[in-house]
Image (cartoon, rainbow, N blue to C red):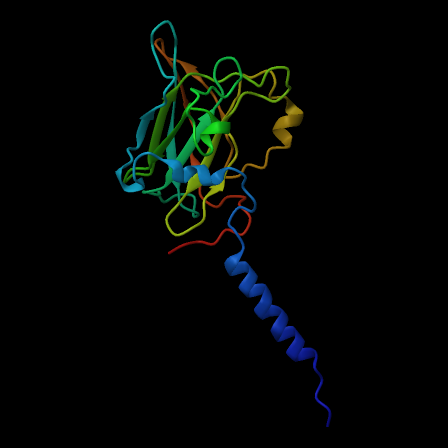
Length: 211
């Protein structure tokens, strides 16, 4: 009796797909995400609060954003997660000092790294960025995530709910990677404050839950 090769083919196919799922990069392609490794301080020495280089109260009203990073279950705080953030200045440019290396040549010097504390909390203080000059994109703050045991990946940028460039059409096109990145700002007198919680793995391709 002649054996049918089809079951063998199916077995091989599933083996290949399983191997691919184990090696596929979390989050898919991510240009510039490796900049997260350019941190001047070792990951385990990072604080959960950072003041970006442009942050000042001298004639300015800075912006403070805080929140909690949760594990994939959406309710357990995630400690030890690294967040890399960078953005434009108040003119819509990524400012340079002239001695930048690596990805700082593109990201500029307004960037920072934080590590969530035991409660999954993070906070950064900066000045509100402006949109790119002569562009229709809303003002935004880029963010890359590095959690223990997984590749780095990007999530939705921080956006501002009161930004007139953040139209209904643009809101509908957001992927909500890591949850919604739209932040509502509150004027507390000497600064603006906003909150964004982050959910690891949410809408992230090839995401694998770690123990």
